[in-house]
Length: 117
Length: 114
Image 1 (cartoon, rainbow over the protein chains, first blue to last red):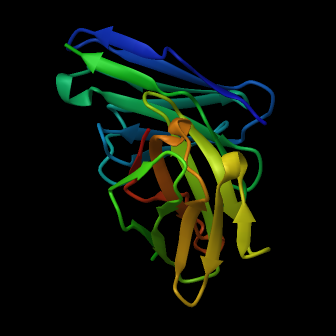
Image 2 (tube, rainbow over the protein chains, first blue to last red):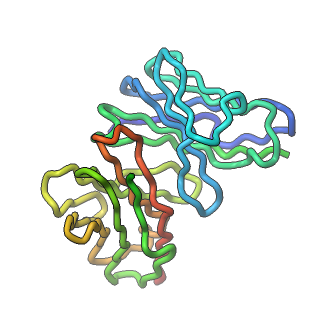
Image 3 (tube, rainbow over the protein chains, first blue to last red):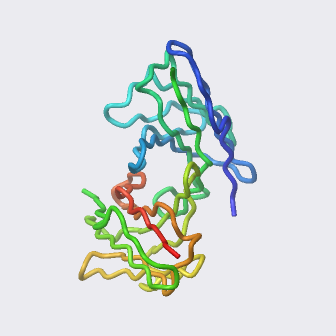
């Protein structure tokens, strides 16, 4: 099956710093990637839809300036948490679709656990 | 509007006994339905999907689910639980004609005891 790689898997940073998380589709091209946030023992919350070559579409309540998403190529999307604070600590997961999003399977990265001190 | 409800937040079974994880959905159109599994601190893995073909869908690791339109359900089953099945399970719905991304249920934690 298709592989999606996320890096880093774990990151600890100081409050006020910025952290970048990468999501790569290793053996396929992903026009669309999705970024989710997952709080402990809760479901995944869609943050934004990342489209190659265009601006990301953010879900209601997600701060665009806080969570910067760049999808510069068909195999790479990045999520940058700017000026991170302890409340941004969470598990962030990306996913990519092989075909049409709503009828195809999504392939998920392994997730990135962010801890902000 | 679409929604998905996982009826049990936690299910506990003994190894070798059947597993039933319940899921009900709401969708304006014929939905696509998925079950994903997540092991601790890991990403999600697709178990199976229903996309308007056969109503009984077989997935990986012995899991299967039956799409019942009259009951708006898509329950996940496995005849015999294994210790390695202990994980978080998510029922997911998509609605092609609504043009939205996937909607996740809140998840069901499956515990398997020996």
